[in-house]
Length: 111
Image (cartoon, rainbow, N blue to C red; front, side):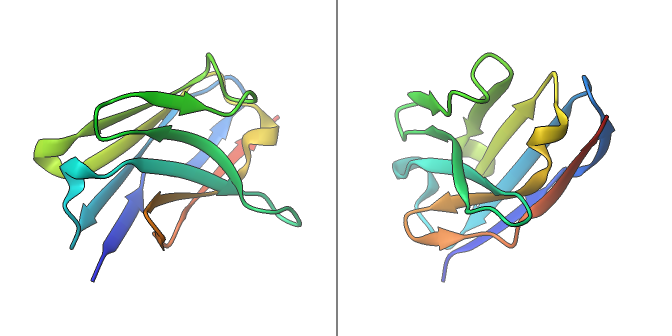
């Protein structure tokens, strides 16, 4: 079965940076697009960024210019580099492939 393990979350001050990682197993990683989503307290889960198997990327307007998604097929890992973090970026961040989800990693941005 597919397993996705996220890491890299934590507490950071506004303006700071974090890099999230998601390592996949049980899936042909290099042939699948990967996505990052987030869910803040009391809100629905929302799209953050995605990368196709060919490396094309897409971002939510709220993170464009601040976040960068990338992938390393040799390590079966997708990354989310988050810069210039804002308090409104506080959420649990999840990675996804097809219909599968990781357990999430908490990101908290203090003002």
